[in-house]
Image (cartoon, rainbow, N blue to C red; front, side, top):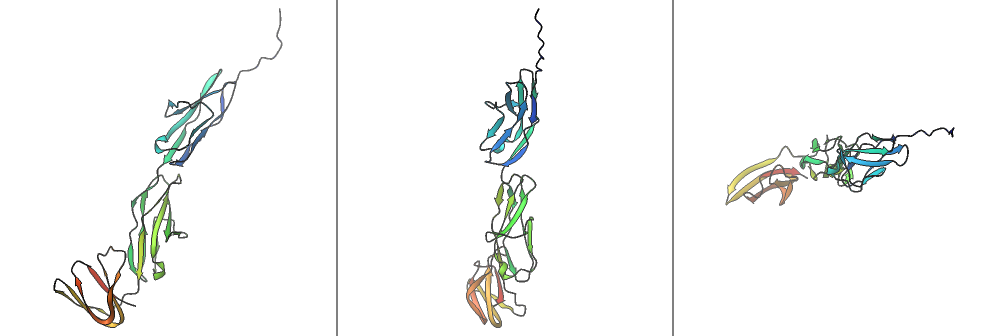
Length: 252
């Protein structure tokens, strides 16, 4: 009879020492999931997506080089050796499309000294972050859905936009809103006469030197425009009906 006095080697079922991690990423980014496990070799791996096996996904890493929104979901890996099977924790993956701006900032025509407010509304993967810009440069501290100037001046005129960033880092930039700032309106002068004449409108005004007539088609226009040849203290102007709908006098 032969007696084997050696110590028997204990078998080791798989133990996951590093779980796959949930993550949020932008469309087009690399999705990389990994797992680490110990136990008797050989150890086999089978990745699953929403409880279905992923063909060919049988290593410690699962990679999608160019992730899309349809790759969002629940991932896990089944680890197996001769001594048993163990399933990892679920890694929730969110692949985010760029934020969608549902309400664009609107252009504003203001008079020096007024208060103005630009606003944007957007939806996307929260939390959303905002960065207002003017003429292509970031405005320090302007990181809310609204941007205000309490005492606007001509130097503030320009092209304003806002970049919206979601939690995955994807960005969308709004349309440009034009801020125009005119000189202070003159309160002691006015257009003295408006007469329909010869298929048009005859405007007359009186006042001090340096007055300029301006016009715009609607109050939503971004900018008042000088009417050529209308600088002076006493003038009249024949305009075609429909060419412009709103007029004002300013002093330069």
